[in-house]
Image (cartoon, rainbow, N blue to C red; front, top):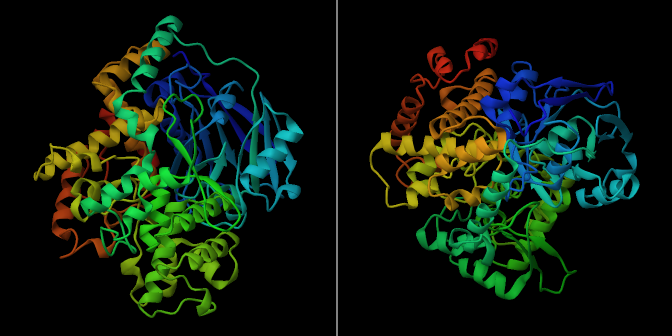
Length: 602
């Protein structure tokens, strides 16, 4: 198979030992790369029932075959580890020049195990590895950490770093590179547990050759042209912040901790208003022609701040917390970036705390410091407390909404808005049945990026048939898995007339592996199944595939209807009624060798 190196680097942080190991061609063919490869390596190196904080918990960084080919949006880094939020698979992606440099080291990925004896930076220069002391970097935000390391090691070094949230084991801490966050599921906290402040990489080699360079170059030009068409116009003009006011009008904008689906002050945070009053500039990710990254600046009397803002951050720190001041939201987003933590989980956890206060349930610490709906200053203070794990309140909320609710009790578990421990993103599923199903069954917890199931709910193909909804949800999962394995940005998904047919052709041109649409669909399902297998080995049960109590019942989704949808999803996947993957299904997906992985977790 072309376009891969066929090897990865294993580093034991406890000893500093490093060795290259082969990635067999059949593995590369079966999962391609990206999240697929990261998941497979996590399965291979993680012991059963591994604790997220344990040195034995692997931290995997993987690249994909499209990186360095010139195909637009393909420069993405995949991370997989055991999530400190869920205890299940934690996988995140981030657009990154780091991915390009890592590919030039001659490795398709890194697997980090063990725990450094003291705070360190892992420096990888081609096939040379060393651990540099990191005491001088502790307390620095990720951007300052990267700047210090590049000043020391050279401008051609790329850095993935954690901030203070990762150092303090905030469970939703992120890994940050080039200003982009791999935030969901808490990978930054795992690096913190390993006492690893950053990974710095310099690669001076060549990208692995593609099978048909001329055809790939031609395909790259065509895809770049299509990426500038009407399908991506919204992202170029307004960015994803365009969604907020529209979702509020539809009644699916999570507001005041999902107690409502519309925000009366939505127009104050509308994308059009933000662009008019706060827009600073527009940038693009590494190797991207779309340029969806919009930066916004504060206009209030405080110190000026400019921050990248996406819809998910806008909702989580805005309507979800009852905040209607765009300057507060921008400052809150800047704090999340500064501390290096996932804005969705930060906002979701604070919204849970706000509802506790509203209901008269005491939180730890001084009541004057408790966050309250609509109170922007309390939001900012609480974010700082979480990022520092400062005081009993910051320490509690750094655990995330599920664990915080378990500690506080008094019925607060019913308004902790998470699935499997991961806080819900910005889609109120009371009117979105496919989205509700996607939230419930996705392996990493409540997630829109692994299903895009809201597209089914918003489409003209919306159906009352459970089997149809389940089938389309599974297909969307499989498509997302393929995009994350190649990798390509999900914003390109509508630039293809027939995604699987055209992506299969690209795979053939790049890798030389004869690939047809059906085979590519199987690869997507195989990757989804690998994630499921990891969760099974970690102790997953049928009860984990559900929604928060608030979303079930008269004002939400009928529990019997959700059960029927989940059951239909299991049937579509070929799983048992209990959600287990039978050996026959593993055989059909070419995963017979992983049967023992499941037995080890039972």
